[in-house]
Length: 405
Image 1 (cartoon, rainbow, N blue to C red):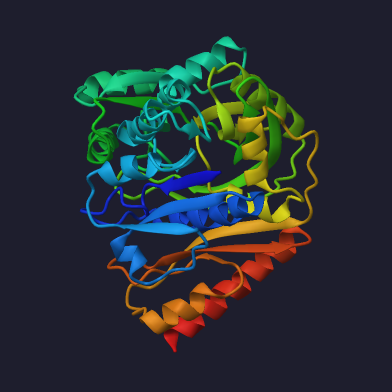
Image 2 (cartoon, rainbow, N blue to C red):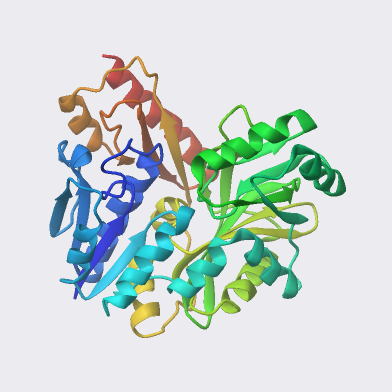
């Protein structure tokens, strides 16, 4: 079977614009899922932005098409010569939904959620209403217009209570997100959303105290199986600064793990068309699990999950889609940290240094020598959380020292 793995940020989606700041996570997921699908025995095709391809980064696809134009004809061409397609793309501005629709129209097998499920889960407001109707705990939230006046927004904020979270309705990750603690920050928070999304709506959400976490699940479109509870390192910032997702670790040991598994399983099984790998973001508070979002795609937590699981995640996806078979159990060994590491902008990354670092153990995505994008993704696996974190810091220090030389 021929499989196209298309990752939007590194695969040509922004080929005529500035390379995304998400390139580290994006390329890391592309590289790792290709390796895992190869182990299933599939013939894997992919695409690469020419600015990334020029450095010949490690990528074990059978065929790589280098992309020079953002005209999506290259994507349609690739979809037309394969048997199935696996998408890694943002939900923002309906990008993931549009790509999935193209695959379905072409009559190619989609190794992931169907367009209808993507459309529902992309709309954070609708998703929270579905969760609420199922009896799951969700934050207080309101859907608002980006042209709303500060006074009208503040009135709703007061009803919810400061601080509140301003979110892009269809955003991916932490883009456009702000934690607002006072009235004066409202206009800037709305403007921040306008810059990253064409959607005229945004979501205002209660800030819930607790641990940022997620659950990774495999679904066959009817039943879902929770694989792991993951810790997420989130930095929620005021509107004048960028909120950041910095990585996390797998597994997260927490007394509410089973409740989180039960809640997310219930939610995924009640959204028609959710199949393959799905991630659910949530908050673990003192006594409850609060559902935040559903990610109808591969998430960064997969980078750690694949290191601690005794099974191949790509094989699970393949079996769930092709034969509707779900895993009956998982065997998690040790702990895996995954982290986005920012480098000093003063460091110049030579091509020969890039190639040397790209081959080092634990480097999921090397620091591409592209203007303004000095960061890379590391994954460290050890027998427990403390040792994995220590290993991560040693790897990080070693690479930065290499670059400084």
